[in-house]
Length: 228
Image 1 (cartoon, rainbow, N blue to C red):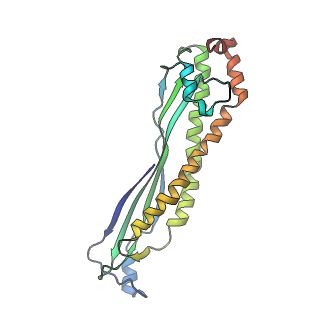
Image 2 (cartoon, helix red, strand yellow):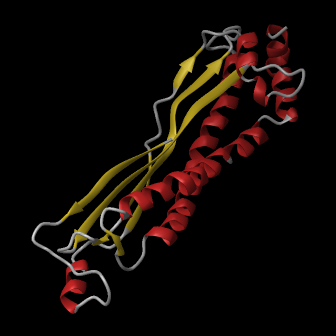
Image 3 (tube, helix red, strand yellow):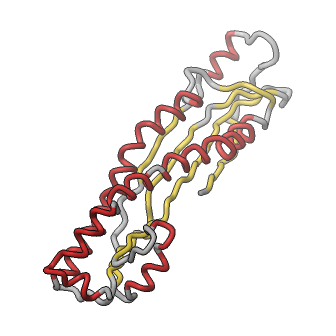
């Protein structure tokens, strides 16, 4: 997870007096800045990579953290979660260079990348066993996609409630971008990460014991036989 900050950009030819009550001219100058905004962008669904190079024993080791005791991993879906903030803050600085008004423009990009679906090499493509395992793994793929779509609006509302104020921000010159960036790092990135990790609950439902039992008996027991 990462954040990229584009530092405040003072607009030339506009000097403000921001200490104490603002004169009408200064208020008018601050009003030239765009309103603070928050945008959440969902990364495009990545091209899915399919891998049949590994046997189910290797996949079992790779997926052991999510495996029921005594279980086997016949297929596996892995993806890298991505969340990054980009911050720009156009600013106007007063003639004394002591104060500024700034307008944070925040973009959050979220998604899952490097999505790979593994099927054990014991189950050749075109067989009933391969198709059953693949169908199961595609449910995991859809769960990732549905989760991102489901949290997009929630993240937009929560972050906008904090940053997308009706008026520009004011403070000592050169401090606003750093202050906002610190808050994004320390509060909001952890929050976004927690929301993204909630996909694990949906994935666990797909891997219910009943589903493993069904797969074991699928294809007239072919899967169970090949996975001995």
